[in-house]
Length: 327
Image 1 (cartoon, rainbow, N blue to C red):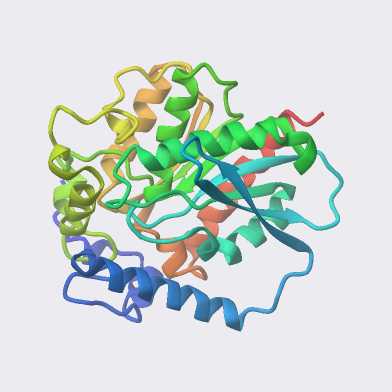
Image 2 (image 1 turned 90 degrees about the horizontal axis):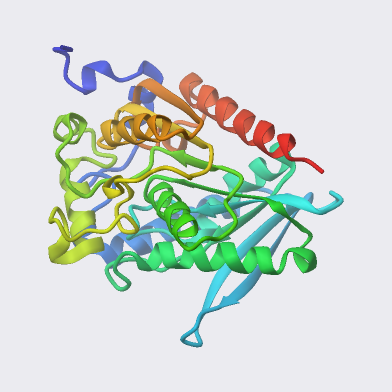
């Protein structure tokens, strides 16, 4: 048993980066002031974007997938401007605990991914809780997946190379979408790539009790987020897998899976358990656990060695999987 507390176990580069992160009494993300935190995240993301030179080699286009109720789902398409199609597509779900964030916040990261991997990224602007409780976000994921495949020819997409990916809350939505796709009998995604995904509403694992005061996404924040996502259902026996994928009892038939987890993350043990259960169900799994890392370490400390190691592994997995099915 490790007797050091979480702060003592932090990777030195990540610990240094953490000192510069603005904190409220509730940590980085104050979910008790949801609207204020949402506005702050948008302002911060827009300020960073304004300082970054445009990347002309990546084109950005927003398309709309129609819902059955007459509303539309916005999907942000990023593609290599000069690449010949049809290209593989990564259906992307942004982070934010399923209650924060928006698709365009990840443009900087995704443009780099587009160029490095040579694929299209379809960033889904899914509905957030509590305005749209789970499984609304996963339903948006299923809609995006179906619509992109149906429009493959017009969009220059290779419909046989469509994959799912997301980070944090978005990783949970990607996993839930994969379950929906399987259960609806849709053609399977090529793979799913889940970065420190949010999978389990029950908060009973060792890591969910261990990570309480780092400030990025601690136990109290996670409990509050799940209460916003599920309301009174959180932690009860009434939560379906499409709302919390760790609840799924049958993981057979899911696509090959990449999972990245952080040692000092509330989600560590639910991520490791999901990887183990997938593998036991016959699903090929590539699992990475990063020592000394806290939640979303790659975003808060992108220059750190442990962040570079994660990006190298993640991009490598994407390239190999997309290339294996290259026409």
